[in-house]
Image (cartoon, rainbow, N blue to C red; front, side, top):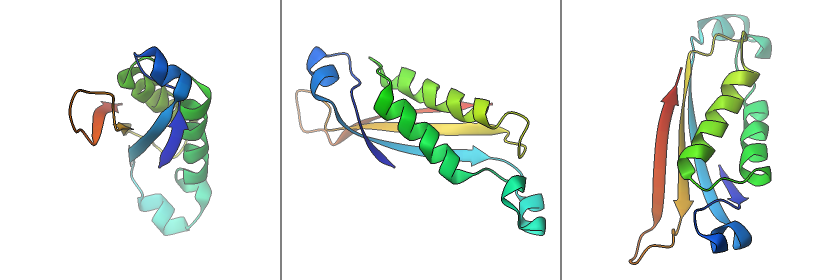
Length: 113
């Protein structure tokens, strides 16, 4: 997923913004969803996408680590008690970070139960 967000430790990043890539891995048993073929038995991926979009585009963080934590927290909170979500892995990539050199991206990955 790619979003435009205003995150970074440098004031210019917070004012100008930049593109951010987000990947998530959701850990849950999909046996029941495969058996009953009902959305209520699994994670609603469109809802997860909307949550991530909201966090990245409407909130502001200085650190990619804080952005990743907010995304993980929003997903876990929204799925509490539903579909047996066991854990989530979130990767956020700041594309073309302001570093002294040619760097395509800086990435943070976290996993939360």
